[in-house]
Length: 110
Image (cartoon, rainbow, N blue to C red; front, top):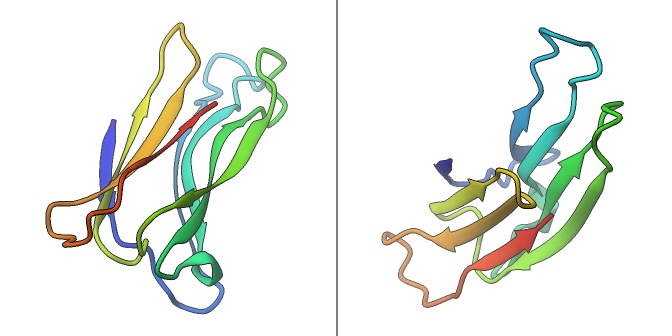
């Protein structure tokens, strides 16, 4: 899954993408893959984002979140990729071609 975003610098904003459990078979299927969460206050020449797994009561999962530094201004267009399956899910961010910085991507394996 890929998503290209520009995070808002608006006061109090949080920009996020989650892949969430549907709970249609069981109310415990509520866990989520947090592709990213970026608070407006964490945006600058480099930015901070949270990524990982949130159990939300799903007994099959353990919450495992981390804050990572992304080496570019998250208010500029950039692409997040989430990969999941039998192996541990991971997410990564990279600056889009429209971003002229030469910043490397940042990866978080959950």
